[in-house]
Structures are given as C-alpha cells and as structure tokens.
Length: 436
Image (cartoon, rainbow, N blue to C red; front, side, top):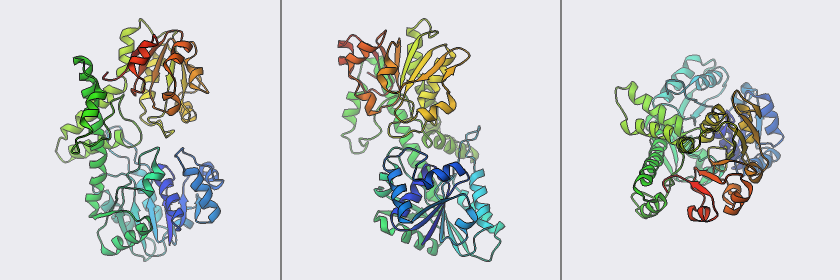
C-alpha cells in the first residue's frame, strides 16, 4: 500500500516514519528543500527519542522517502495523511490555510481513488469542508473520501506513543473509508474507536482540553497551598490514589506550553463562542495558565530591587523535557521579561538552544543580554539568581551544594518542583517553588 504524508512536523513525520516501520511504502512531502535533504540523509529536523534511528532504518530499507514533489507523491497514493500545522490566529481560531493548500494540491493531482486522512487538529466540521473542497477542485474522475484520525502524541514520547497508543480514533462517513483505515492500522494491533467524523474531531479537543484543565486546576490548588501553608506534593500524593482522578497530570508548576494545549484550549473556546456558547471552564483554564507562566518571575521581582545588571541563570528552555520544542514555552515568556528588565541571562538546555536562538539570538538587547551555556554548571557560575523552567535529567541531577558553590547569590526559583526544599535550605540556598 502506498501512503503519502503531507507535512513533516511532529504529527506528519512521526506518523510517516511509524507507518514505514510497519512495512508500508511511505512518501513524506514538505516544501522545505533543506529539511527534505536532511531527512534523506537520515537526520531528523526535530528531537524525539528514537525518531532519527527509525528514519535511518527505514530510509535504508527503502520503505521511507522524502520529497518536495507533491505531485509525484500524491498521484497514485492509496491514502494521503494530512499532518500540516493549524497554528493559532490572533482571535484564537485555527489557521486552516495549510489544510486548504494541501487539499487543493491533492484535488489537482490524484489519478486514482484515494482516502484523505486529516491527522491535524482541526475545528469540528472541518473535515466536511475538506471533502467538499477537494471535490470542488478535482481534475480527474476519481473517488475521494475524507476521514478524521486525530493524533494523541505527547512530545518527547511521540514514537513510543504511536506504537503503544491507548487507542486509535478514526472518524469516517462511509464503510469503505472505515475499512481502509482499519486495514492500515491493523499491523499496530491497538484498540480502535470508530466514530463519525465530527465526533472524532471533538474527541481530540475534549481530551486535550480536559488534560489542560487538570494542569490548571492543580496549579490553582498549588497557589492556594502557598497561602494556607499546605504542600502541593502531599496533596497530589493523596489525590493520585483516587481512581476517579487518576495519577497523571497532577504535578504543579509554571503552566503548560507546546504546540497543542495552548492552541487547542483557545480554539475550542473560539468554536464555542461562534456557536453562541461560553465554555467557562476552558476560559478559566486559559487565563490561569497565562498567569502561571510568569508567577515565579513576579515573586522574584518582589524580592529583588532590580534585575538590571544581574546575572540570571535560566535552566531549561523547552516547554517540557524530552523535546526541543519551544512553542508557548514558559521559559520564553520569562526571557522576554528578564531581558526587558535589564538582566544578563545565561541559559542552558540540552536540546533546545538552537531553537531558542531563533527568537533570542545571543548578544545585547535594548536593556539586557543573553548568552548560552554548554552545561548547567556553567550557567550557574557567578549567577545572582536562578530560574528552573524545564525538568531535564541534567538539571534534576544538580545537587544543592553545587548551587551553593557555583552561584554568587544562592537564590533559586524552581518552576518544576524538582528540588527538595529542605535539602536546598539546609545547604544555605534561598529557595522558592510552586505550592510548597
């Protein structure tokens, strides 16, 4: 079976590589020639555990191909999976221009009956429009069906999640489309939930927004814990034994980031408003998360007379460990504030520095400066204050005595609650975290 993948971001690239690993003939399409050249050489443009190894393996096996020539990729494909971005627009709605562009390319190119599968996260009802849009622009006399197949990957574990998913969601409007998708996923040997297209689209938003709500709820409880003298880690430990609540997404911190939760909460809120309904819980979630991202900065601002001229160590730039993605990363929000306040920032991240340099090139800004360290201890050396924004193992492993030894002023603000408060204070460190 020939499968084409439109887009080689997190969604498209991981899907394409994993399909190839199951023996399908897969062609991944991207407009970026340099990116395609990298992937042809077996180099992954994104960091995901195990992804680059699978690219190399399936390149060599001849099951995986990369190209900028969408015509050749789509012409005789049995199924085309769309995995392009649907970024947030200023009003919170999803930008569907990339979906539309690929849909038209498909319509004007395919020369045989084809199943088009939308893996991108799209507002409810989008797949209906995609199917009509493709039919409007069809050049050849072929039959096209459109299905929804939302992804549920966690960045940092995307390859593992694909092969070990809790379930696969497919949304179709015909038995033929359902049968072909079931056949495609048969080698994965995973539970499949087959529903109508609009239900599949809603399942994606409902799941992501529920998890985002859970995170924001725990952050609110953590903030209250600080006021009343409770410890959020104790509270979470007591909660996790309740099967109705579950044990995951109970860690308090500086809010969620990445390519999914921030965008999807705003998109669902926008969708509800368009239908004359207010999702008050989701509205609150968005608001709580925006405040939470800079909560530690605000604490530090009250503690310090000024950041001007201070050396500030920033440990962790990616929005979470296991990925180099900085989209909506709390670190980015804090870097902007620190630089505006005149801080001299030295930042460390084991994977995300090259991405950080796109938005924050090393050098001087209007008020402050930023540079990057090769290891966390280098970032800490001589620092007046330290912010921890990502829970990388390299950062978790720093012992309290190292903060005391390396920093000019041992003042640490821990946004991931990775340090033991008692051990830090016993080592002579002024230490602040979330909800403890």
